[in-house]
Image (cartoon, rainbow, N blue to C red; front, side, top):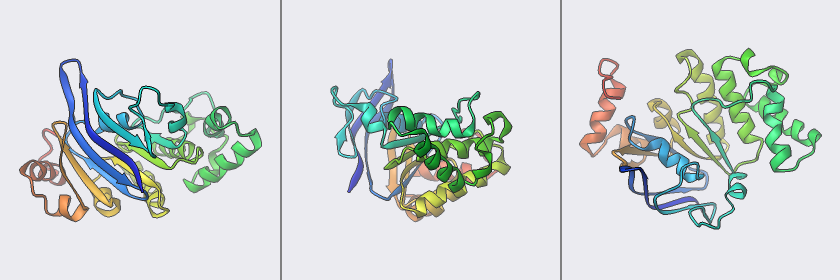
Amino acid sequence: MSVVQITDLHKSFGDREVLTGIDLEVRQGEVVCVIGPSGSGKSTLLRCVNLLEQPTAGRIEVLGVDVTDPDVDIDRVRTHVGMVFQQFNLFVHRTVLDNCTMAQRQVLKRSRAEAERIARENLARVGLADRADSLPAQLSGGQQQRVAIARALSMDPQLMLFDEPTSALDPELVGDVLAVMRDLADAGMTMIVVTHEMAFARDVGDRVVFMDGGVVVEDGTADQVIGAPREARTRTFLQRVLDPTRTSGV
């Protein structure tokens, strides 16, 4: 079953075309990792999937719904799609538990008791059962990102979008967040992950998509794209990110 079907997607900001004819399918249960240099259009692609950015041209179907249709009920589609950003986007004056129950109660119309039960289950799932009453400022960056994941999971999504979820974290905090994402993948969650974590992409991704200059340059298994890239642009990028002595331009 196709969860996301992107056909000839274009996105421009003024005169600058950021996405140039993207075609991409994500099937149920797949983990698709999107890699590429900064400015290649990765995050814009992800934001177009749930219409945080309005495509300039092309078609995007999410869970069988054409989200590029002007008459689409995008809020209804978004109830099935969780998104985790680079920044945690938590409500700083609300407790962790409140952060994980607000959308459930407002959007899904769950009772307080049901929302809290589901939130606590997902906080336990990300290893933060004991921090439900904490404020975000009392947590590390990695813990805040795990709260953001628990909040998204509490909406029972059928698709999870991750936009470089570890890029704002100190290196020692990255592992805990990636471990949660690995568990989600093992549980069969459909995921599109924009990431610079090559080891995660290699180990967890069912497919790896390399983007550069607003186009998909390569799309295949991790062994194909990371292990034996066909295109010179892919090889150059991987040399830079895998060799710590060559980081310029990434």
